[in-house]
Image 1 (tube, helix red, strand yellow):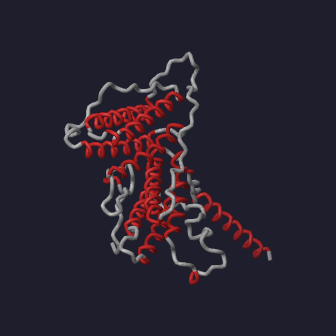
Image 2 (spheres, one colour; image 1 turned 90 degrees about the vertical axis):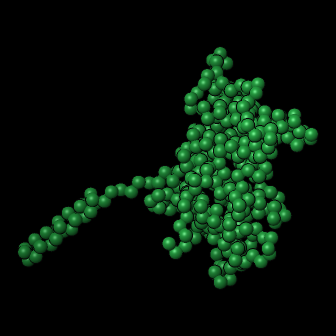
Image 3 (tube, one colour; image 1 turned 30 degrees about the vertical axis):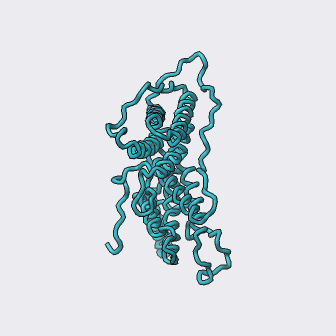
Length: 344
């Protein structure tokens, strides 16, 4: 009996030692950051959008239907760009995930009885996706914020194109204009200074002044100046709002120059030069999102990214051959993720 008791005690000790070793040898898994969660959530949303777009492509019959397959490829690019390298972070359940409750189906609906996918389903999912991405870009770490803002802008442009083909109201940018009361937050007796951390915002304001000057010059030489004056005024307004944003941070605004250097062929091909200028403005604001701190400057940059991307599309700048819409507004094509071909 005593020998049996010793055996039981020894067995218990061995089990305890094994458990302690297991606990000590297992490294605790780090919790994902809010930025990582936002990236994973947006990546899952993009994959769901691609699936919906391909379902619509398979059902489309009209020759003039939206290019759903090309849209799906763009959403695949979004998912690849947003996906974390280790693929370890799972997005929380949402309307886009397989585990979430799909707003289009009741809990009692079986897969076989599910209704066919409709264009409005894609439009609804797009609105949910780009709104989440815009919100995440406002608070994410600078580098990922640039990608989130670019993806959100691309999906918003896709939603506008899809809404136009459906004959419904075009969605507005779900990013408010930067709010400021016009008075700097610093003491009135403190002169405004230059802040190296906000140099990107100063450069963006200068770019707006330069763009307004280009349109003013184009209007002065055009037989019909009204074609250029509205856009000149919009760039002037953007420069003013950017200067007010800087003033809120106690940063001196960059004063406009009397004249700006333009490309040598500006007068020879004004239309093309203005297209390139608008495309460069999109890159300016995408870069500003990627270097700015969270707050009013970041919000202003995100709003201007969407605005300038829309105008660039209207002027024919930065369009993709397939859909006419860029996959990543403001981000160069050589930075796009490479998608593996099926079967590789």
